[in-house]
Image: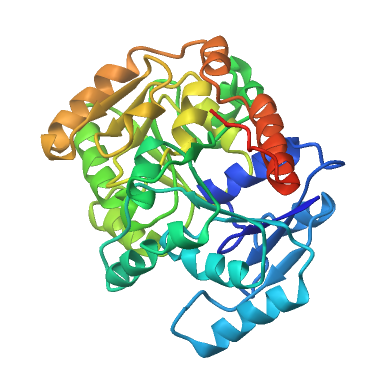
Length: 368
């Protein structure tokens, strides 16, 4: 069977990386993924998707008020009646695709929540309006965590699909740590803070830079920022203004996040809101102490390595906690992460069975 995954694009974001983790490990002789994207440009994962046997279709930017978008969406379903299962990852705007899929008699229509909030910009009221219709058009509701499901689905029942990873890839390797730090020009006596995430309002990079500045006043340190996004230039300008250019490393989008985590001493995530970030699961699998905000769902804490701090505690408190937590050192968390249910091998089999049961019209197995 072929499942249509509906996304914005397939660049290296958290949602997209989660999907690729499942795609690589699912039995593709039984379940194959195709992707409906909303961008003209090729994504970071497009080559791999095609190599794995997936098709990629492209629509204009998702805008329900644009008649051309509505027509393109309707034309797609007119031309592709073969899909019996669609899995939509457009958060609040998922109802737009789900409504059209229902109109075209797609029997299994899954809405998936990846966040416990939205940026409060000009689009916010529109997104809340479309969120109300998700339950009307979806046959199945899925979320990355409890907070994300409650926020998106407003009291309706939903399944949780873990943002699972290949735990073995992240096990700490001291030889690799030294090699990666040398590549980054980070001395052994330098505290390396790490962060992986798109440069966008929810990740709160500007607060992270202020916290890092406070850390630098207390000890020798560098900050590793992995990712890209619309706010990157703004953050780079702030780093330059604060004279931190020689201490902040911007890597851009990287394929080797597991290796870069070997180089880090501590992982920091001061987010304004999250679903259940795969980066925290990865960091714990790498045995890294983690300092995260109280706006990140506490269910991501699968080991004792994670501490949560309120954003209003202030930058000095954050800096002190980071320095204190960094003294813990690396831990072997392999068994703990396997036991937590976040290893991809078992989760991929569960999702595969979920799709097969849904397509067959059988009672869908609970993921968790």
